[in-house]
Image (cartoon, rainbow, N blue to C red; front, side, top):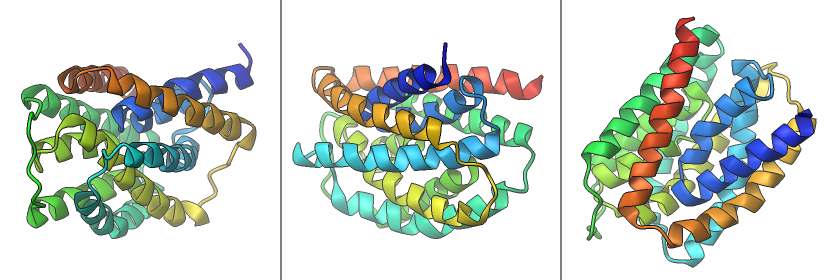
Length: 248
């Protein structure tokens, strides 16, 4: 299969996941770039941030028009994550690829287990909890910069478990966090020498943007608990594969 076709197919899968699950897209982008398209971990991290930033910003608009974005919680998460994202992005360039892969897998597995243990919310609190939001937001920013992902695969569990949001608003709000954190991490990586393969990045991003719309429509037809479980299963599968790869 040609590189262009692989990029289009992978982009469509990532966009579908991002539109439906919020964080599923970012957690799938790095593995897709490494294992399907031959990117190094460093190059995949930078390319992933570009793809996820553009796709998330587009998907955010769609979720916002449906009223599924909690702007206060999302803004606080995003604001406190900017500095950690930039600092961690600079640090990650000095870490061996195997360590980055293992760290990615471990964090994804922990997020999946948190979702499995947390019941889906039927009701949500309108009050923002500043201490919890700030702490979780700073951690998410650091993960975004260090691993080169949008951070939504952790933002969704954090918004559900720490702030008590239902799954759909958590997905929509996570897109705001992803967009801001990814931009901060991308700015920090601007001085690195990771190659940008635009012949792959551009079609990947285009397919992801188009598929994200279908993902949003799919999410509207599925219960919040089913989305939560699906997200958790995806995270566990990706985590297991990458951890096995890092240990060999």
